[in-house]
Length: 400
Image (tube, rainbow, N blue to C red):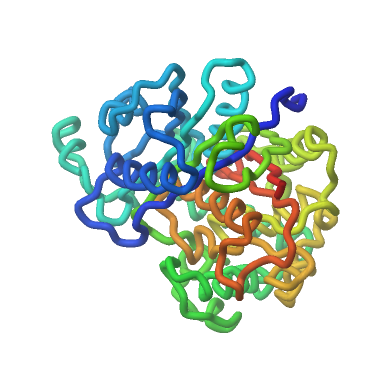
């Protein structure tokens, strides 16, 4: 993918209330995030002429972006819906940039929200399906091939555990090293006032927590949350009149290899290799240029494999890279998941990856709490993972 002729940037971000938010369905959570994003940058709602949403399981509707626009009173020229799990939001940012480059819109909104914990909007599923259980965790846990995976008891967590076990068998990665990923991410969350889990934990705490799918314990698995966020994207030219300095989009990449884990050609290497190569090539940068990485962290194995596949360490050396925690924490060589991520900040399901983007913007603006602010950040990498390492997206952002 070539660089855009126009300089394109993220100019506004907003997050809804997070954690447990009863009484607000996905549309209302997105509306709240939109209001905060518009206030953040000074754009008027009437100026937004591009809208990219990601749908929501709790309010199933085939034309989600149209209903959202109707709900909040937007009349865009360009609108779309994309849904590839945690990889969605980066691809929506890149879609917005492409639409702006092509002249299809000037100011684009990317938004995603879900009521995964409170399940507000459940009554819509009752009307649609009659016997909907209202248990979104059951929906997520049953993800798998209906003929070759689900009948044999596989779950989403169990399939990620296959990757962890294979990495451990092939490279000698230990459960203690995986646990350290969760410990370091929780340390960052402990300094974030909006994080759902803020109590620091030790490797021993993680190892002794409730087992979920070997080797994972509860602390190595995503949270269940309500919440959403909104991002405003436009050109540098338009950004001159706005409240804050833009955060430039330097490059992006994406790669999909399969949907179901049983069709994966490797259980130790992900599509991040290809997505990362394209992203760095587009930006004209290398992994050495990155000051921090908001790596998608649905499970403890996910950032570890991503560190290898994006080129921050060699294949098989991810365990050693994270082992002490010092290299991946604030003040270290490559701080990762500085807001606490899916493991400790929040995980509303599909929208979870959008918070990795908003955190990267905050870091580059130097707007986070001093204790977790990366020192003099210039370039940040954000990644998203959809499915069972099925699709990976990458985004490089830079301070102007």
